[in-house]
Image (cartoon, rainbow, N blue to C red; front, side):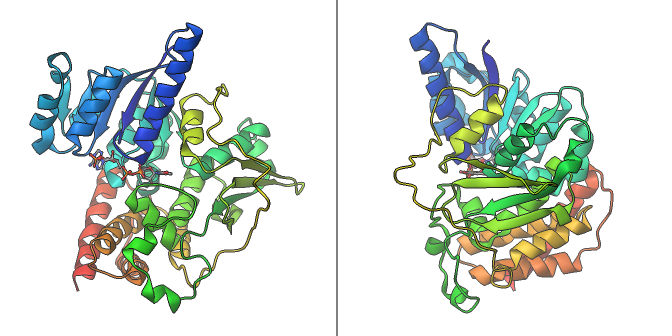
Length: 398
Ligand SMILES: NC(=O)c1ccc[n+]([C@@H]2O[C@H](COP(=O)([O-])OP(=O)(O)OC[C@H]3O[C@@H](n4cnc5c(N)ncnc54)[C@H](OP(=O)(O)O)[C@@H]3O)[C@@H](O)[C@H]2O)c1
């Protein structure tokens, strides 16, 4: 059966890899004389009109959207007449892209992905979630819409994809078997600055922060990996997805990025998921985790893999990790504030306005000022996000 897929953030690292999976799976199906495995029914992005148009032509997609309305004419002009009428711009056009989908891959970067997360779950669809920021910022709201019949989140983040696989292996999602989970161990690569002291971290540059040792990703998440904020966000994400509480989530650094995360059970047994660092494995899993398809995106060559190292993170040199634990434990609007302040600070760092060490300082300062709400609705989340952006912008400007 052909699965209908919408890909939001289609022009980015996650989006283009999702299209790669569709291309590969459909070529394989054609070679066997089978129906296509996937049909792309919607494509959405920020402003990259020419890229979206080229994707729509290749995959014959009639529903396309850009967040940026100033680029709509460019998108329409680049599309053939038959596809141009299905092009739109703005939030409602992005939402229109998911209407016909069975599965939605949310590869939008940042808080901008929140609408897609909520609308997909509200519509009772499967959400392949790469956009961790929406789950982190709006946890209480997402928890409610996740109850919609048919709605389901399958994490695309490699660590959570690994945890999902390890938990499924023990059938932990059934009944009360989550009680048998002692700990979720979220793996971190350590990023490009692993092993550096606080003093050495004063010297880091944008180029250095963007030079991730094992993963090739978009700029925001790559900087987040360098500060360990990405790991902190993933701790909050793991708590939202699997509901075990922060005391049962640990972070361990593993520089080879071959073990993606682990689950320790109450008897001491630890299950791990291993594969080479390739996000296509996780995206393919989110598209169809009931079946393991024939590809080897993450296949390990055991003749070259000689060692796996593990160490604890340096929490003093990388304070963003504990800032995220702190915000996660506060709950309510605090994770939204953490995530928004971080987005502003990372953007300022990427534009050369602040230094790398200032990212943690900005987030800490904004979080300290926040007087949070415990059980926020969507309006309260949006207000907290706007408040945090304003205060973070003020901080980076001064
Ligand atoms: N890359 C990875 O390997 C990886 C791994 C795990 C999790 N993730 C998560 O996946 C998400 C995407 O990361 P990425 O690395 O793929 O980022 P990226 O390469 O920077 O791509 C971002 C995508 O979001 C689109 N976008 C930006 N603003 C938008 C808006 N307001 N509305 C709709 N679309 C918008 C961009 O469109 P334009 O091109 O038009 O700007 C682009 O398609 C992030 O949340 C990240 O944390 C990524």
